[in-house]
Length: 342
Ligand SMILES: Nc1ncnc2c1ncn2[C@@H]1O[C@H](COP(=O)(O)OP(=O)(O)OP(=O)(O)O)[C@@H](O)[C@H]1O
Ligand SMILES: [Mg+2]
Image 1 (spheres, protein in one colour):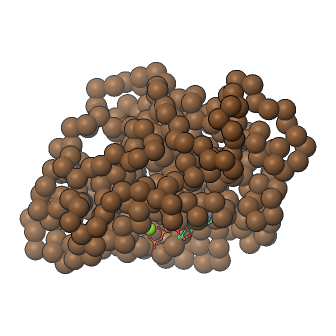
Image 2 (cartoon, protein in one colour):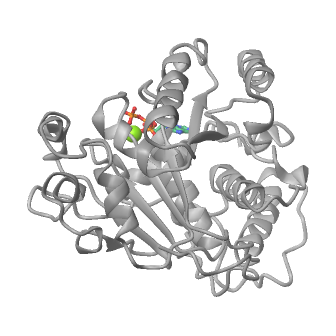
């Protein structure tokens, strides 16, 4: 665990992942972006240059490791997508980041290209057999500074097996506290339920990040999650708070999306990131190649929006105000960037 560093200068030495043909040729210099063509592709190219330039810019490091629990008991709202893409973005910004896959589906492990068949040492061994976290963590191919503690199918049984174990709610917390590698961020991808796995995440982290899908009924069921957060704060983890809300699958072309966004902002206020994540085909394609959208298509609106969300998250964490110029670059201000019509 990192605890020594103060706000130590910018995160250094970021190594962006490989670019794909759909973004730029390797010969495009970051210092001299190509002339902006007044076409959707020209604009996309320009934005991607900016995105990649920003990725190399570095961000302030948090004073202590920030442990962020990505939770929402509703299924399919973008928890896993947000976990892996934010984690990759933070790593591209120069941070050292660990993703803990706490969902028996193992989607985060898949999306990060991490082997997670039944025999692979996994987060199940950590929770149930007290195996040190360091023994299951694997580096993520393609993204320097990004690591993953994978989930295997065994984890499906852990909800029940944990019940009879000592300190059943705080086993992940203990494992993280004993982990000695320096990290800036740990992002925990929760399953779509509020059982013991999610409780372990809530006890281990200080921050909760709730992705909210910009659809009808977006806020329904959230009360239950918020009550659980209160309960865990009251009994097991006094530091726990909802620090961040991220609007996902935002479609700037529909009135419903902006209505939901407005409702969420009214309800939660400052916790809602100014950056929202557009609905993007590239984001949904990336996992089937074992990649995040940051390496799969770094010039896409999805990659850009996750980079911006990560920047906002990082700056918020050190109390620096965020310049929202690019906050809605993917969805609202650039309708041509919404995949499907570009
Ligand atoms: N911004 C986006 N644009 C398009 N598709 C998206 C976007 N975000 C997520 N998706 C897709 O929506 C589906 C659900 O996303 P994801 O798996 O991240 O949700 P989840 O909350 O983790 O689901 P679960 O509750 O099952 O764990 C996936 O197929 C994913 O590829
Ligand atoms: Mg998931």
